[in-house]
Image (tube, rainbow, N blue to C red; front, side, top):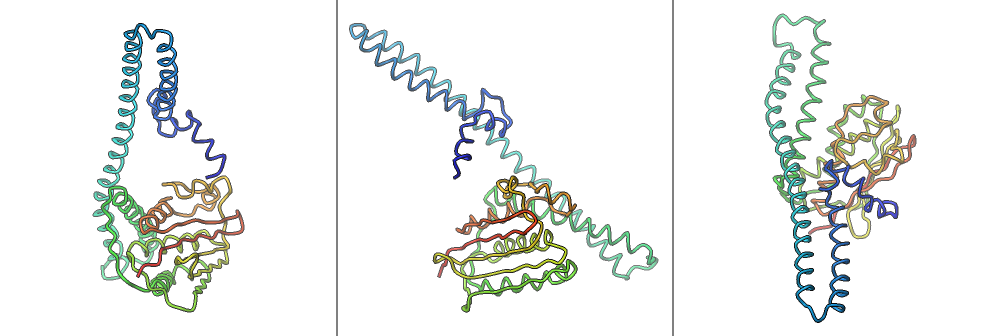
Length: 316
């Protein structure tokens, strides 16, 4: 943790604004007040005890009053945390309900559009194909958003179980690159995959790890240069499996880098290019890597590209 980040933890106003709650309900402020009262009470009790040693009833009365104040503050702190927990629960439930309700209509819309574009329906003229293409692109974007929201909901509610299997990580990477081949070609991008000489058998959840690799590869393609170049490396680092993906794209501004793994965050230079995206992929990626026992990070320079990496423990 940097010194500046450490100091930000003591910025009570900023912390309260972050949770969007009144100052008097802010846990950081209440903890500070409680700490001050505890210190003052201890000093006061000691001072009173030495001056009124012959009258212990006064000391006892002061102790009872201070105890009552501390109980009130503790109650307010508890209520504040309960409010935050309730808001978090309602948000997760809202995302879960909306995602499930949208999933069916979006899937039906997608199937209907694909049927109309397939040529199996009479009366569809060639001039309509462009409109169907636009509808299909937008339905795909909606489907992608719904899927991301469902994954986040399951992650936050602990309903995305880790189903471990033994498989070759290099095979999973090759398969993912192959499935993205059309997108890679359309984006005028080249992808190079290098690995250490040996294969990489891992014992983890292939479904969740596949989501991670897909998100990182999609970002590298989407935010790459006009003539994109992506280098993927798989090896070992400090007795862990090490994955790295490097692009020569637009990069991430320095001031945005601290927010890059937050939900719904999109860097300001990304918005200039009007690229599609929900700002959920990297949040999901980090959450999954953390659940699988690994670490994730990145280095980036605006206008020169970005390198994302993650490590996974070697399990047998």
